[in-house]
Image 1 (tube, one colour):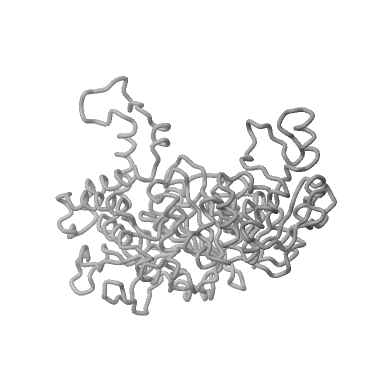
Image 2 (tube, each protein chain N blue to C red):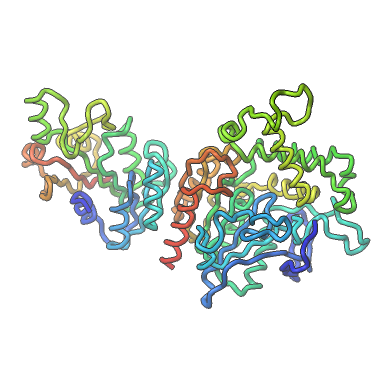
Length: 372
Length: 198
């Protein structure tokens, strides 16, 4: 990964005690911002990224040269309007886009940390990112928002810091990783670890990245982000640049070619060990467990306004799991709105051009900001 | 805003916590929020209507009254409103019990099947009545359990539900219903509005 030298980085001096027991300090958090912070400092939105995202929410990602991962939702005039709001996003710890992660060198022996990097949790990620508020002198955010693993961080954030955001937007997410979620993540990890280049995580540099394993992990995960209907409509049984089946194992079908492509481009931008660490953090996420099994206790101290969004065709973090969060909030009389958006684009809907979703997001934010 | 909503709004004091069940596009919610400083929530089954509420800055949960009321704790709202939908539920009794559990008080409105135009239509034409409040044909009406004002009054009494106020609405005229005028209001009103508590 050729990370540009103009990466914005905050070195966190405060020691952070991780859930695994280890304490880290003087570690980097790479972040990006969009729009400008107003003088009252009341227009900041902290966006949390999903498993393979990074701090480049909008505009052009300087590393991949592609659009930022949430370009449909964030930007001037968009749902999260950067003419109006100051958007902050940072790379999670454990990641590979400049924040403290397994590809960082060990200060003692100069080798990359690999699997010597501590196992981190969603809670650790959120606690690390909280330092950005102090960095920008923001007392209270206007909103925290994110989909998928970003949504988990949103929930953890408001639980940890109940009075630090006015509004809370968890999207296509869950309060606890299901057995199916863990199973898919384990499949991805096993694919990486089965690659002979992985070498127990000690593959040295990115040149010997266990790319085959990582690509398979990405391919498997990618299927879970789409819906059966969406796949069928886009690919069906269409053949890839050939008239007929070739009776071999090349990519005969367009869907095969598409997945192979998704796998190969992913390897260029993502670190295999980071994939292991971040999926582990998702699997360990169980917010109710942190409160003796009572999810609503996680939100007892907050007066924030919640807006929860799910998608009809999302089978990875289905509507019911999002609704469970709504139910927990209603049981304590919290201010919570909820909508399930009709879409056949699967879990990925929150990243795509889904007008009903983007309108709802925009209306919720703008109306809530007016009431400020 | 339609007259029915004005009557409902008059029943609610300022600064209360209110749940509007089947809040549709949120017209009543918006009025209560703006004029009565109501801490208002809505429950609505239609995605399009939920979107309209969000665009008005209202807090709405997409959901179904028959399944989703159970998530609210006992007496967690000062008032729960149900406008002209009781008759459309598979199990209106269950919904009514839930409304009375969740709300300290409930405001229920029903299209009156005892309204004289309804009776005349059935009597003279011999076909299922179609009026302003009951615009659908027998084959596409969402209404499964039609009742009259008199039926509703009898029902709530039989279940020991307290009636604080019963109002008969006929176009622009709202009038109180009492024991003595029940027969006549049951004939003259096309809508009944009840403030009840259990």
